Image (cartoon, rainbow over all chains, first blue to last red):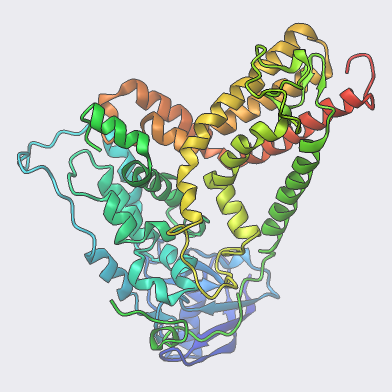
Length: 250
Length: 261
């Protein structure tokens, strides 16, 4: 059965703007993005919102709903009470282009800063042989849909704009971990993860994991293992000694 | 690279919402409970360290085990090993508490817990932290969190000693309630210790070729299962060690004196 819901939606360009109140019809089975579209269709034709698949797989409709980073298309209206006012804002960590649409180019810049997969020079394409157990670990990270909600919620840059140049964010630290764990990747990743991409800024408060719509265990399976690998390389004298004595590759 | 400040042009391009958070749920509840739980443990720990009633044959309070001072009663000593001479007169717990304490302090789960609840960095997801500047674990003192794996090695030793204490109590007083409290505590401590992220890394996490090390991979799989419940074991073992310790002290003081105590 339909009802009239109270919505507060951020309207504005650049950083300037305000929360505007709307009363809008909601029907059974709808999600927040459906209601935003109804707002566009009936009351605010110039309301800007980025969306694409409506199936939680493209990562386009990331927004903050009642203060929490969520995918608009995956947030069911039935999770709210009918008398609740639902506040919808753009992602708070990135510059606003218009209304709910933010400029997420920070993330593309960070992606470009990570050296791509680097196989050994003597292994030719077609010669790669990997066992399933070796593939599985990094496959979890490839579920990422790049909604950038983990980047948005991470307090290192959300609350401290000044850290943006030095911190890649959970999504790209996870990418570094994925490559470092790859059996055929030979590029140096540990030192650069700490020094160039800011792994040390992460204080593992797990918000990235909490908001991930793909339920990737970013902190437990990528960031902490990467921190431990950095400890091997930079802070553990026993590992250093072992590598010297047994001529082990670190 | 361009450095920006909190009030920079880039910052002003974000939605200028002047409230700390727009969350409407009770986000403060989890950090409040965490704060209370950890504070309770700290207060109890300080009291227990200086409390002298830590042994009631065959039970030894976990906070005082292994008892390494010469002042320890004979039954409380670990194989009679007392490396500290007669000069040491302080409570014996002080000698070892830094090891499990350091293990928990640098534990990846507890770091999350106290960064959120004590340092409010951040208090909850999407809730602004109150600090003007943030450097994380990039410099002293927090860069020292990287020594966690060394505390893990010591914690394994302590966990095994607690398991030995529980085993000894089982041999000497199998029907004692204290025995079973110590056993449950030892199991929880072992699950917490071996579910540690450093343990997971050491077993096989550091490898890129699981397939070349099937035994280590099996160990990693087992540790990963414990690790998935690390938070649960962290809290369960925190309370179990506190309760087991209190129980033994109450028996030693004669407060608890029923026949199967």
